[in-house]
Length: 256
Image (cartoon, rainbow, N blue to C red):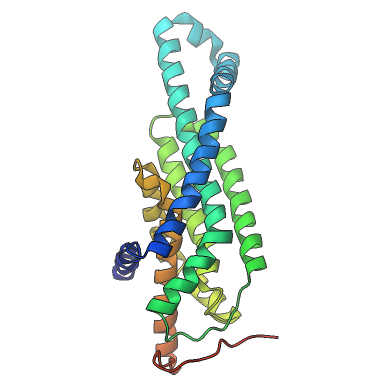
């Protein structure tokens, strides 16, 4: 838990850097504008579709009471509105993972982790493939869970769990791809899976805080950078690997 709090603290400190703050803002803004437009244009059709589906399944019960129909309509609208939150988050997270986070990673690592050798166990192509795979599995989980979203509170819990998983799956690769070698990437992502889920779930809660939710995906990505690069630093120190001297200029090590 201490390492998670440390990662969140360092992420907050990184917000003071103008070049980092911009990359925290724009992915969420793009995703929010996109899905807000979709929601406005499709709202009536979505509500009518869900209500029609419910009438087919529970028509007798709904028709028997005007109050039941009105309450059901309220829950349907709340469930649809809530369902847009993970879609906005997913879109922003994919943008962060494939575009914004690699840019932030270089700046943050150069300032906060200059002693870590670049071993380039990942690649930009691998980042895109990993992000798209995580996004696809996230959507499957979201679709499978949709019927339960009509139950009060269930949608929020499912969304946080799925988003926490998405965070650790997508950002865990990106945070290590420049500095860790393939073996280190596999080891750390496996050994730290549970702490990463806790970190991802904590960051996922920010998606439901007004205004803060705009930066939530990029904030989560940056938190994973701090969490995993610090873990990599400790791992190499425990293994007796000599860390680089930040005062000495070095050339990145490349792989064939």
